[in-house]
Length: 407
Ligand code: SF4
Image 1: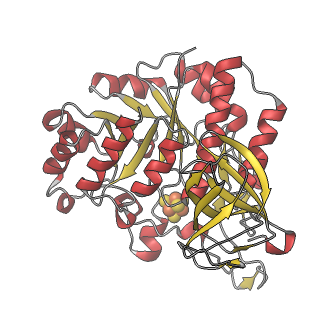
Image 2: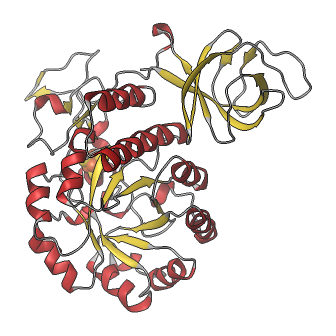
């Protein structure tokens, strides 16, 4: 069966490495310029070069978002930037502006050019157009239904990428000016203030129709397209994209590993069972605190697919430590603390090649060998004895009690 690509977000180098280690075939990142997340970017060109080296060494690709809609004043440095991306070995750029598409083909011909979802591509005719312009891939609009995708794929002349998980825009992607209007931050030039997710006091003319404890918000549930994966794979989609460059390494590891498992299982066995989906639902609940839905895949979103008030369901587990090393002789694990935990806590270890394995934290020592009752300090290095064969880069999460759940 044709291998499909799992494409994960990378907010920084650490997350790029997590995504690749936990099963992404490719990562996408934004540089400090010309990207819709440029304000939050941690990638200068040296970081991108290091990320490319790491990804390529692990058989993965790197895509860089150059997806702003530049105004005349934004163009300075663009040509040099595209040449730099080509020079450091970036595999593809994700682009929304016709000017950047054309320029990239002229000055950096070794870069694949992928047409961004910001371009609202919703049919095969558009893909035909981009194919004639020399583009290499089209990211379909997130507003496509499953039927749209299937129909498009029947005539698509370029590889097609679709979103399968993560945040959605309540507006048509790439066409929202809510942030521009409310904060003077241009959503299409990297400045979205996520105004749709703010809490609003709602009035019908002068009559308040809100409750103080239930203010109005207008965002949609995050996308979770896992149940559509088999049909999307069968339709011929080339790449499945996870949204969320701002998400934590733990969230990323959990989501990437979950979709890796679903894709591999489907490609190996030709089916996904309810047990496979149930496992992923439980898995995602350990890291994801926003409610999710099918996006547009099941047709136009309905009232229950929007978030008018409550945003979260609460995570059922909390990331407590990253495994730095494990000594098989002594069974001592060297951990980097991420959140509070203590002796006696129930924990679960997981990793790129480690199935979920529960254990109880029986011992904790600091670097001087002194006993520690409670791990309080993030990034502190501690040791614990555990008879699970851990590996560097595995993660440990705490099984949360109801009282501890974070909303
Ligand atoms: S304000 Fe909301 S809908 Fe508009 S671009 Fe930002 S996230 Fe998307």
